[in-house]
Structures are given as C-alpha cells and as structure tokens.
Length: 374
Image (cartoon, rainbow, N blue to C red):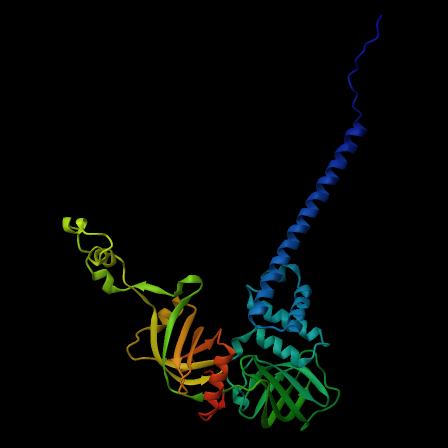
C-alpha cells in the first residue's frame, strides 16, 4: 500500500493561542502609541494657543519661559481648558506662582498683569484710590518681597492677601512699599507702613508718596483735524465702497450712432465709464485732543453718526494729520473707545521712527504732561 504524498497540516491549540496573544499585544501597543501621540498632539496644540496668547500680551522671553513651566505644571485636563476658562487660568497661575518662590515677586506681578489685563484701567497710581481690587502687587518690607493680591481698600489703607505666608514677628508701624505694574504705563512704588501683619495677609496704611518706575511717556494737548480711513492689507489699500451716487446714476442705452463711433474716441468711452460703480474710501473725520508718541485721543466731528458701527466692522485704520511744524503724520493703527463718552483712542501700529521723533518734538513744545490714555 502506497503512503500518501500530501498531509493536512495539524494545528495545535497552544500555537494558536500564542499567536493570538502576540497579535493582541501588538494591537494594544499600537493603540497605546496612537493614544499617546494624539494626546501629545493635543497638548502641543494647546501650548501653541497659550504661547500665541502670551506673545499678544507682549511677554518677554523670560516670561515666556515661565509660561512654559506653568503649562508643564498643569494637569492634562486643565491644560486643554486654560485659555477657554479665564477663572481657571487665573487660579492655576496664582497657585503656580505661589509655589515657585524662586521667581522674583516683581516679575510675578508683571506676568499676572500682562496675562490678565482686565484689571488694568490704563491709569497711573496717584493714591490708594487708584489701586484695583484683585490687582496683584509685590509687598516689600524688612528685606521681604512677597507676591500678594488686593482684597479690600479705602482711602487710607489696603488689605493685601499673602497666601501661605506667616510672619516671623509682629510688624506694627514698620516701613513698607507696595509695587504695582500697569502694562501700558509702567511700575509704581507706593511708600507707607504696615498697620498690622498676620498669617496670610497684611494691612498697608499711611501712603506717603508714590514713585513712578518704568518708561516715561508724555503727551500734550494739541488740537488738529484728523482723517481716519479704513485700511485693508495687500493691494487693496483703503477699503472702498460703492456710494449711493453711483447706484442712482443711470446707464445710457447704446444707440446705432454709438455703434458706428470709433471705440478709441471719448464719446465711445463715456457710456462704459458711466456703467462702472463710483467707489469711495470709508473715511471718518475728527479732531485730536491729546497726542503722545504711542497714541492719540480724539473726538469725531459732529457730522459723524454712530462711528462705533464702523469701528467694529473695520479693525485697522490709517490716520492722516498735519502737525503744526508742517510734518504730515500718517500711520496705521487701531481705534479703541476711551473711558469718557465721545472720546476715542487711536493706538499707532506702524509709525516710523521719524514720525515718532516729529511727534516727540511737537509734544515737548506744547506743555507735556504724564501720558494718560483714558
């Protein structure tokens, strides 16, 4: 009897189970790597958004490095919500700065005020009345510099929260200074004394004087006519709109006489020109009130109605005015509402060095005062 040449393969259960286990492990590792990569991509995207926010707030490189450390400090679920939940962002940044005591208090104050400018009312500090509730500050006394927050104020005293701080002794009547930073103006050091100090806070009183720190910007009262034109990038230049005049202009119908006319003659070109819409730039007229080397305050002319609508619609405007010395100042910028009804702020975006020097010379000759963009 002949032996069979072909044999059916025989599968062993152990080999089948082993192969299945290996494939399952490979699938688990693959899914784990995919999940980690997806999580890393989400964290990178969240950091990019946070970094862009920091750049818009004009953080220095040192402050950006600190922002990165803060981001690494966040839990994954908090990192994803930081920019969408300002309360969470503020609370987590507060906890981070409290724990990182190696960061100089004044640097912490500046970082907080840059990241959360809603407490910055663009005014200088002249007395305790100008201090804002919730504003961060650096409390400096007896060799200490401690990051704190204003929780109560009167005309004579302010209560300052100092988280996780316990006094080594009793401070009553000791000289002290409170440092504040306003991003659009500079730093201010308020000199006074401590009425009392206890765990997690102090009471500061008797402000003797306020010392200005930081760059000094001046402005002067100069009243000049100003024209503001809505601007778009690229080849468009000023924003153009079709006027009512063009809509009301009828287009003359073509005639046989026109058809026989040479196309290069003015008579033939006239109907074509009439068919084109009449375009005009979006412009507003006004008068300046005060001018600094960074911005100017102005009012719109009486003929201008509801300028807020156009300001909301167009983001960039080009200012055009002639200074008393004869220099024509033109630059693009943004229009912001002032604190006084009817007054607006035009903040320069691309003023040249020459234009700023000319502004500065004009300001110096018109009784300059400390800049207040309000």
